[in-house]
Image (cartoon, rainbow, N blue to C red; front, side, top):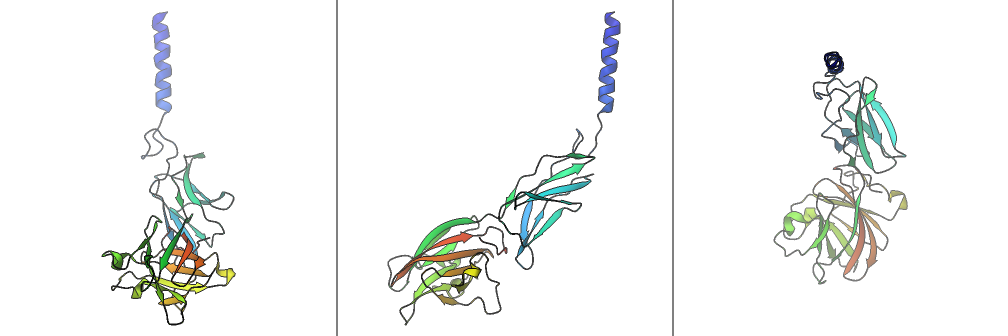
Length: 253
């Protein structure tokens, strides 16, 4: 009896093992494999983003989730172009294989970093006159006399003969700054959510500052920052800012 029972158990194990197959070379256990190496980049016009990932062997298709009430799209390629999105937020993807879905991938986000800063006229104020942003969305003021200012500065403040403060791009920054930042200015609220296009006269070497006015900076890393002047006096001003982490993507609000 024991021999028969052992034989039955062995047969069941053999059948179970034989039914397990390697459905995907990238997953010895079979099933749908989660995409890896996700990325976000801007479209050529700067008004959309391209979400990409590595191909999964034997994938039938992919499901992409994007901002905007968690909308989804199905594609058979390894990227998804989201033209002119109406919301900022996270993107992720999962594999569809033989009717099954993988776990969701890690996310990439267009959500902005926010903060505030203060700079003053470099000829009169005791407040640092230069300001810059890192690729991780950190904003920092720095003195024009700092030896690192020349390679870091995105904008600086200078007082003109009309007693109005100017915000100046780092293309002409003090001490021969070399970061190729540019700046635009407007009080038009219709531009309060999206950075202006570069070129075509929109970006100049400097712009006058005014209370509640908006600036857009295309900084030395090719990322867009929107500033709003929140306090302004004779020699310095403060501002709030919104930094877009996706290089070249112009949507900041």
